[in-house]
Image 1 (cartoon, helix red, strand yellow):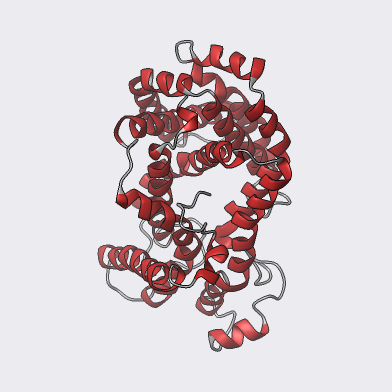
Image 2 (cartoon, rainbow, N blue to C red; image 1 turned 120 degrees about the vertical axis):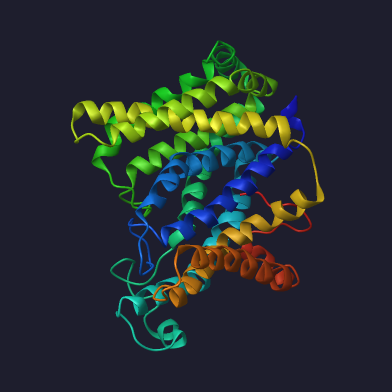
Length: 377
């Protein structure tokens, strides 16, 4: 069974998608959507590639994380697994909220004339006063970690049962998946959430009032665990439909662009919801299929990148915002600023990772690094 060996394509996808996150957050600096700091010139055209990326980038991360959870269980009990998840997700989250995120809030407050003074004055006085956005204490881009941790804890008894005794449930799923376009049955719950739950809950990433995101992302996380449990059945069938999925995804995204031109109403809402879930699921299947075909092989580059990706994720937005603060009011144009932000974010994150984090073992657990092994979120 393929699930008993390492899938290098999943490692590559994880690295690629987290790499795209850096480009995405650089893009947020330039477009009208709400973000922590903004460039002095806004480029509305950039919304379109951002919208395309935004449809599937988070869903595929939760699916990949669900797949990784299958491997993380291994021979662990539920208690052992939950403790391991806390070490991998909870400790970096706490450290990040205390030391990595505060500079982001500081630059935002200074840019908006809500604070004057040095960073050290901010950190020593008001950095932990109140919950963001009214206050200053936040997990910002690290919201992914508490969600993943909660999903892992809550679903761990179910996962252990499926892992140890797949039985009739997995066989039932296999029969669906083996049918033509059978993998598209997975969109039905997603459509219910998108059409009937999403209108009532804004996505807040605060884990309290964020019920659509919780239901939607936990479903995708569960899907990842189930799909990897199917072994060869999943990979064989995703290979069979990759071209159809590519066409379906392309058509659906064009359909979304057309749909967004109409006024809100019941017809637009339910049509948009269907196009959204079919679109995101199609691109997820496309990415799995082509990664399986071309990327399922080990390399030294992958080994390094897969270990580095988690610390990069933790560090990157702080670096982006710090650089962006000093660029935001310069009249340099989009291309020079974008290049500086991208190269600076990757470069400074790499320097911190390679020259500091890797060389100080005491920092490894704070950035979710396992000892001498590739990291997996």
